[in-house]
Length: 129
Image (cartoon, rainbow, N blue to C red; front, top):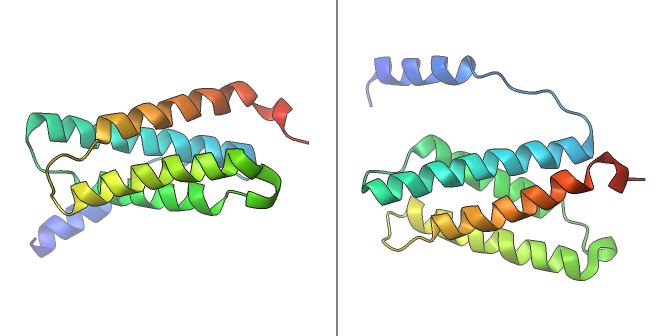
């Protein structure tokens, strides 16, 4: 990558409209949406036989870390354990894509996250104390 390429990439990320969110429910909602978006982009790249966009690899791994670290295993019990397992499956698929391994199940990972996102949207603010 040349200096000009790096500068152009930095400028593109600088222009992205980031949402400022301080509500915990909204933080998870935005994180799930971004993860789903990145997983879909990675799955599309995989199906097209192209290379994986680094931006989506990094965003997906970051989103998974945020989601895993937000789990409360004491209060969440079995649900937290199951969510962790799904997030870990997604992490393993993204890591396989990062290593450029064949057979990463990115579409399946996106499907799981889509289901979680749908449920999280239905819970909405009323599910919180």
